[in-house]
Length: 516
Image (cartoon, rainbow, N blue to C red; front, side):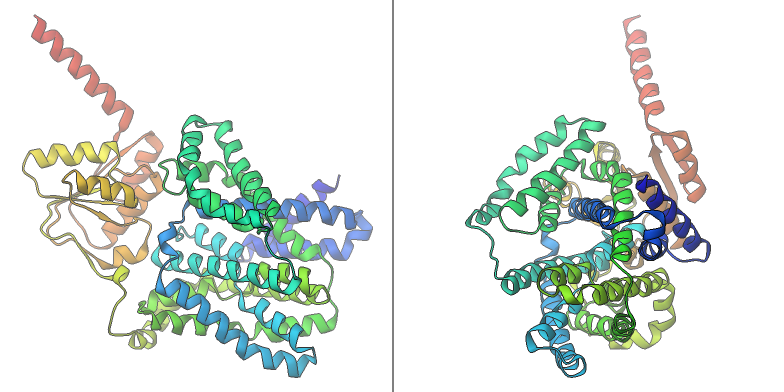
């Protein structure tokens, strides 16, 4: 059973990678190369590789769909995203093009396409790394993902031009997709919380997004991302993303296996990959200085650039369409860049701390609007999260005369709450930059009313890490979560259902006493 062989190799080498401090995905890449080397002896043939490639493609689509669920389209229409991606694409292609032409003795066309392929960064790796560190919503994470999406769009244009294929006229229907958002919201509402919700996510990512976009001559990856982004503002988008997590992770193992199983390289391919890997620091440095140009702080520029310091699986897609003879060397290059980038991102935060004194003086005097200090003014109580619990707590305390302010990571919620005369600011509890810039000098108590238990734990640790000694109170659905929040530093944690039951009982008792 070939699936058992894949799983055994992936698990064994993934576990070995983790044991020596490397991310498991490095082991999955190694497992792919091992399967390529010993395939004949253990019965892994070309047909099996095709099946694995299909599973890998499903994993990529699901990953991009879940990235879309956490994506705000407004994050793309920004100077640092559009300007940074286009300038990096143009500058890096122009720098690498003559080197490839003269040293590899290829035609100008092939040299240009190779330079273009090497200018892209990996959406799959960056999204997986940022997701693993819970930094997809952080400012530097949003910038990196925005740049990657622009790069993917550029890659689609390059493939269309180089292959001579153009999208069909039906592709124009893509511009009408936002009209489907109300229908998609209702489908998600009606799908419940179990298997129907999972099937809805699979259908949108693989069928409507993946297959649908392919039918009109567009990229299936772009389709999965687009359908995820249309659901990003739904209140259950995070729940849908979590429900697809395990399926996506299993399929993504296939993606990393497939890169390695494509075939063992010869010495020329290894030499090409090694030389091109030496250019990775230049790629990262160019991103860093471009982000500084667009007024990012050195820390944000460094972390965003670190996420983008790799080569892209889209380069392989471009090669498979227009440069098939370069597919194996590029596959080795991408795999090697994954190894380097994974290690760089593992130490990116402490590495920046060591380099901060040299990098901060490079910042521009004008700071990006999204990185201005967040001041809570004269507020006495901070409410984090403006769902039903947060709104009830806010209104109750406001009626008693307390000065309040609230934070929420949903722009729609922020807008609606502000319209209802509540003082609400946009902020994400998982954004490291937010905590570093937060000023809360007069706050005496914090109420954690977010839905995500991990966000409450992170917020509690960050508050105590900032030296906040006031009262921190949270609610939780389960006793084990309550204990984790208290262990992180909260003073009190109340079980939501228990408190609701006690409140209901008190109302009954009050009515009975009034009746007698």
